[in-house]
Length: 481
Image (cartoon, rainbow, N blue to C red; front, side, top):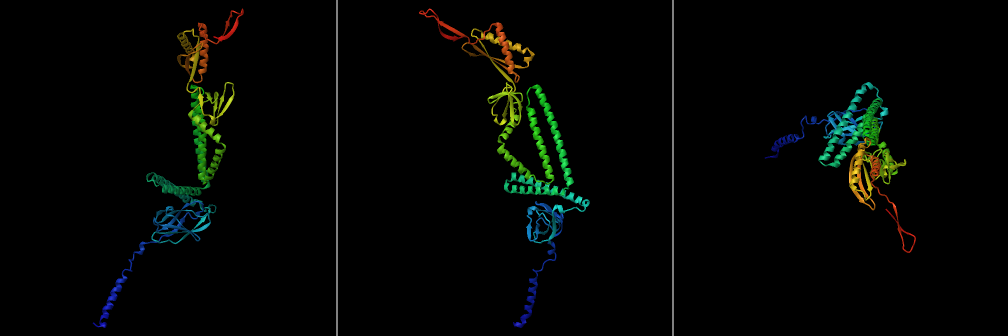
């Protein structure tokens, strides 16, 4: 075939090939319409209040997605917002938790979707709260209340998230990551509370503080009623048992602790409402506590041991005790010391921190242990019978009938050089064992004198030796009988 005859065929092939090569380049007409770039309309609040801590800012517009990335700009600096501080509400609303300067300054915000589509930057103002003056308070009041309500809802949602994170720590065991998440959420809650306090007016804060004080006074009044009720119970206790003041001491301690708890709670709520950080106050108390731990070690030890003594009821007022080598009647028990009064009327102050061993002679009941000595010439069975009759006579007297509980005759306790010891014991009301013992000894002495029963006592005896060589007697020894 000649070359010029193949030219028409070559032209047709080129036309067909060119039409097929252009087909992949062409796109459907609706392909680009499905990918819309986000657009920004407004920022709420406007202007944004300058603060040192993070706060929630609302971005209004369109084309937002759950994966939208928010970027803030201040002059030449760029601040990408992490996804955990971005909350997708709808395709027209985003919430970001950011920290802006104290102001005044002009910031810019831009939203970028996952597909790479970005919005145009939108400028917004940041101003200190002192420069933000409400021009129309009547029209802005509903908006402010709505913002406060929204902040409260955010706090509630974050608290629920904290609870879920704690549950995950317990169930899954991923403690490190979950604890970090919980700490971040707690920081967000603190920022929300501060921002909510900023939105409250001074009159609202004052009203809330007044309500807190009223509730505190109400609980303080309830505490006083409870204290009076307990005090009446202690009076009834003392009518049954003399010297029982354990409940009274506990009531004083609980009254003191209750007052401190109410004052601390009211103070914390008021400071929180006015957005006053309690961290410096806690630091001051920590320093004071550290100073007391070094300088007042003994004082703290006395107070702690005093609380233990009051809680356990080791001894009460009017009890007769022996603490170490000191003994006497308990006159007062405080958090710092215990005061005793001895038989000579001397007041003895013992720090509670020094009390280690206590002998209480009047705890629950009393015991009177008596030893009666008679001569070997007496019939011990007859003597024990007389002793029991004397006890029966004492129990017929109303004064001693209520004091004596149980009488026990133990019998012969010891055979001495010149006497036989018979032991007996009384169970009495607390603190009355000495009165019962004194009366019993008096009656035994009188009865033994009536019956001629001898109570032996040491008597000197002289021994004389007469020598056959001497006409006079010579004293050789002195004995006792």
